[in-house]
Length: 88
Image (cartoon, rainbow, N blue to C red; front, side, top):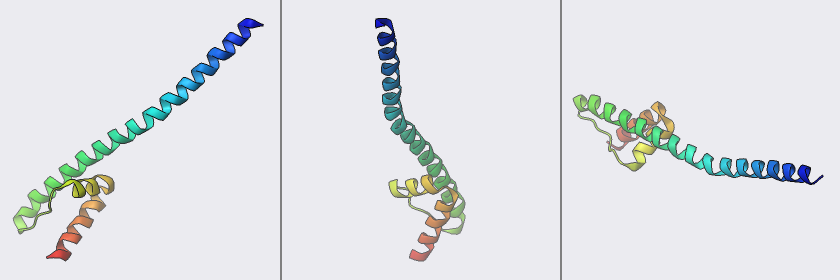
């Protein structure tokens, strides 16, 4: 009977360790996804600025624009272009 209690305690400990690991891994995965999307947004902004340089147009590259481009992707770039054109 005592062996069953030890086995049940070990299984319970494994479940608790799994849940704790999941709690700590979710934010890390989210952070990596945010960093990757921001890098892609920065690359998109650089490409748009390179192409728009031929038309005397540029988008500012700062934390806000990189995050917008990273979160929204191509629609974010189009949104930033529209905002910049409205400001002109």
